[in-house]
Amino acid sequence: MRERQGCDMTRKASGDAPKLLSSGNPQIPKGDGDAPVQAYINAMPGWKSAIGRKLDALVEKTVPGAAKAVKWNTPFYGVEPGSWFLALYCYKEYIQITFFRGTDLDPVPPKASKQEGVRYYAIYEDDGFDEELLAGWVRQASRLPGEKL
Image (cartoon, rainbow, N blue to C red; front, side):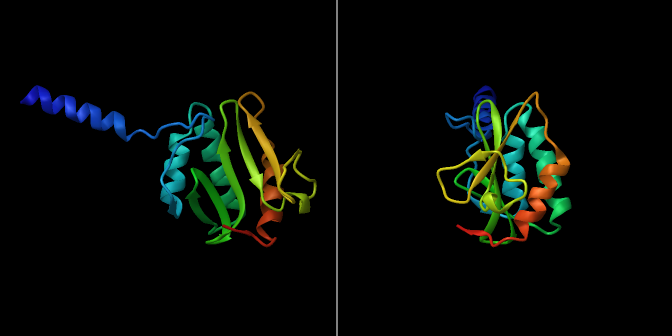
């Protein structure tokens, strides 16, 4: 009996780890607030988790009291719940930051989207990121009307 309990506990422990989608993004349950966002950040694979913590801290410092949620396996940040200015997504090779009103930012983030107004910024492992530039975009984005999702 004792040996069987050990097997069940091992199976349960390994089953608790979030799965990665084929894109490399963690599969995290939907939820509002900091806890699901931290679960997402902790589940980000490899080097991405440390960058996720830095990005989260940058948003918190730039927009004190920012609203947070995870929807569709993606963390969202806003000035108020239900109105979002930024989202994160992990791909196998990089982290993508989505600015929902990105074409209104100065300078405009580099990567275009098929969705009107949306722009992206990608962070690769060896590139790091310009914290001052990102803080400026976060500050600007938080002052614009948010995306209602």
